[in-house]
Image (cartoon, rainbow, N blue to C red; front, side, top):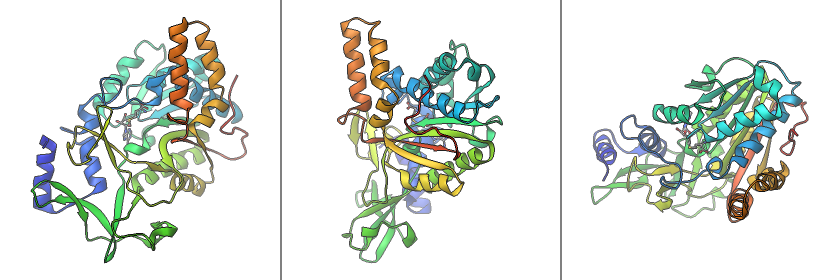
Length: 362
Ligand code: SAH
């Protein structure tokens, strides 16, 4: 068991089992032992590879969408171009470069801002962005971002935010918790708390014992904050994640360690913990603030924005091996066996502007 695992066992002995959200929060963000606070998750030597790390084309196409949304909003001066959860900072580097190329007027008056929870990753982002020729600022929260119309993107952010699980038992639905099993190790079990029936999917009543549903109030709260800001100050957002449009039954909590799935209880703090994002409550949160929300598969979104044309233009400057790498990146980003249909893109924007998920700046 990891050092964090030992601490969690003592905490559970003293104070009782932990909800899945508390367990996830400790594993990912414990200041001394959390996964994002202490480890280097990304890339071939890390635990997983994200879309911006696969190819610069991902950030470039997202930037083209953000530029189109900004033009659509009437090209307001003093806009804020922001990213939440920037990882290594690779996507922001590609976004800032592309904004400068496609819309020098936006680049000249905009502020580029990053919201990052992990102090260690902030340093990694600073290093990645050091030579980019743009001034960036870092913030703790959406509320701390500079004022102005906001054009914001996030990739694989919501899947890292803690979610709660509920399990069907003979006594009805109960919150699923992490307690201490018969062998003295961490174990999943049913806790005492029930669930608001409004959160259950329609097939919940017929579900077999052991069935699981998930709810993610922390994700909805973050979306509410972004939506409130967009509704008040104008702008648009793009959120990309592995997910579905629910509600649905199923246990999607997973641990990834060195590019392999692991038991989520095996190595607290040393494996990435994620779950699939249900976009339906996020879209509903945006709608509550009068924003329009649109959801598409990542493959359709990128192809609609001109992924193949961009790949062709990049490939024209490369040798055959370079073109093959670009072809593989296109397959991974947009193909059905890669991220193309499992990953979804949700856009939110103030209504009345014409930008749709397939609108791009040329
Ligand atoms: N977008 C990057 C990284 C994804 S990993 C990529 O695609 O490669 C998730 C990122 O979100 C990490 O940088 C993590 O530290 C950050 N994060 C998680 N919760 C956050 C929160 N509440 N506020 C800001 N950043 C957060």
